[in-house]
Length: 171
Image (cartoon, rainbow, N blue to C red; front, side, top):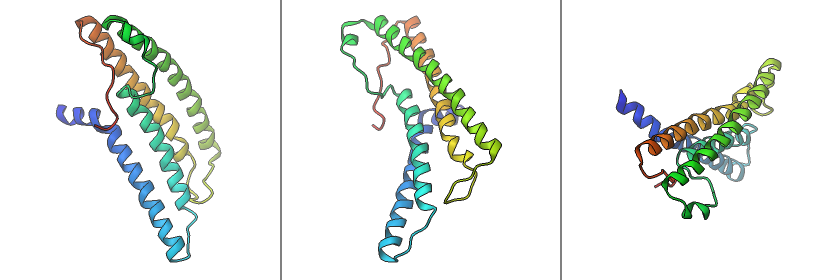
């Protein structure tokens, strides 16, 4: 069971990203063939691709937080030792945690309003709440990954280990 949880922890975002990216490629590819070869297009394909892309973006944000893959200016970090780098990373993580919790609150509020009034999408005719849930879902993942990052940095400071400076999104 521990192996399974560890695999999910390591690869959850990658699997989700692959799934949503595949959904976009298949949907758009099918729609291109239908439009130009069959002179027929659907109303739902553009919405499916758009909403899959929104989920893709928010899951990608969480993956970048986990791997410290966001763009950053690290000139000052080059002059600091391990402890200094850890402190800078911790400050950044705490600020981002505050922002992500704030964004999670407001994005949930939007989702709750959509659920209350039962709004539906134009092309698909399904509850828009499923697609508005991408933002709170993404911020939940970001918050979870930030807490993991903060705990990892605190553990590295206590043990005197090198600070985790990040990894590539796809190795």
